[in-house]
Image 1 (tube, rainbow, N blue to C red):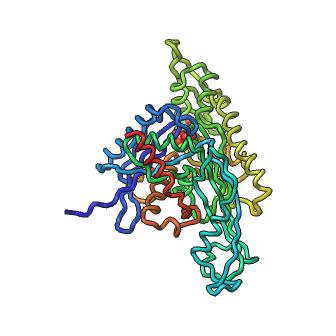
Image 2 (image 1 turned 60 degrees about the vertical axis):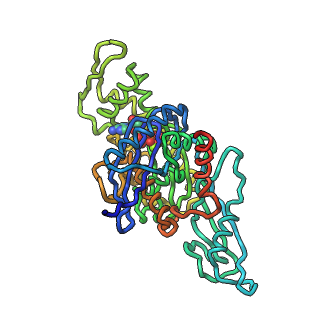
Image 3 (image 1 turned 45 degrees about the vertical axis):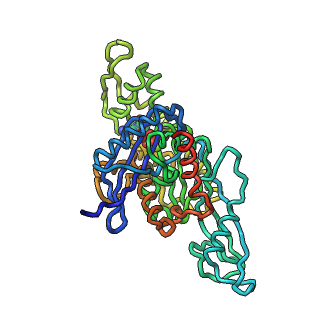
Length: 423
Ligand SMILES: Nc1ncnc2c1ncn2[C@@H]1O[C@H](COP(=O)(O)OP(=O)(O)OP(=O)(O)O)[C@@H](O)[C@H]1O
Ligand SMILES: [Mg+2]
């Protein structure tokens, strides 16, 4: 019998869509995507479950679609988490290094690394929040700054700078509960924007400094990288849903009609609009169809797009007081909203920086299915899941590093506990 390749599956439960990806680990331990599911999301709002039954159904449908395409059966999933409840803070910890015989200077070892990361986590986290990720940024050995790999270095004092990401415990529990109810244990929850970064950003961009902006349906999430590691996590509580809502009110048409119209003729850069261009849209409640000028649609869309990008820019301006170097890698846009014509031009104007749309980099398998900006998080989740499963995550890049503080098992234990409650 031929060897069956191990399976890695991911689930990106968004406000607009639920996406599942099934990947096979090849002989080189790399992922090849063999199944993709992409279905409308029901029961989610701004990254929070608002209707368990509806959410469970969407999850089931997405995984089933990916299973059908791949011909394989999903056993467990790596699930993404995002939304307005996510917060990021920077912290630092310091420990003394002692030699084997108690000298005041010694070689830094794995235990020292674990101790300094533990020390850096000594920040007060609100009762309703839980650490989701603890990502080392840089280390300082004695007075030497910007060290990435301090292991084996000699020193008396080791300091670590880390980015801590927290999420709402209730939101995480409800998400796990939905995935479990759909029939799948959760290996772990991973921050969606962090996963998206894995899929679309190059190491050079992260090194030079870059802001990744995921333009989702409910929220717009931003992760700023400097010197190869995440420096700031920020959520704008607005997304494509709000743009569609503006069209709904502006033109007095149904939400679904407005959504179709936005995707068909929406634009946020006037130079791309043809003179006199218009589209026909069905009227609401049996009213006759009407003709909408593309220029009028643009005027409805533009203020909201400017507001969303402007809020992200304001955050970057605040950050520029603490980030010493400018973001040489500019802005990378992902998510469904990054597909709007004119978005690169508008964002370049708002940020005054180079902008590109980030589709997942090729990783093998069904490229035409997943190389779209809205698949960034789902693809990143499967890459991250694969690396965590084979235990190389910590060797890849700073954001892949998992801190052994007992936390990695927390979400799976929580999931099992919820499962135990249910079954
Ligand atoms: N071609 C397009 N032009 C403009 N907007 C688009 C286009 N395609 C999709 N969108 C918008 O992108 C949004 C959905 O993006 P995405 O699928 O990344 O969101 P999500 O992951 O479900 O939501 P969230 O991340 O906020 O939970 C919707 O608001 C949709 O209208
Ligand atoms: Mg999303």
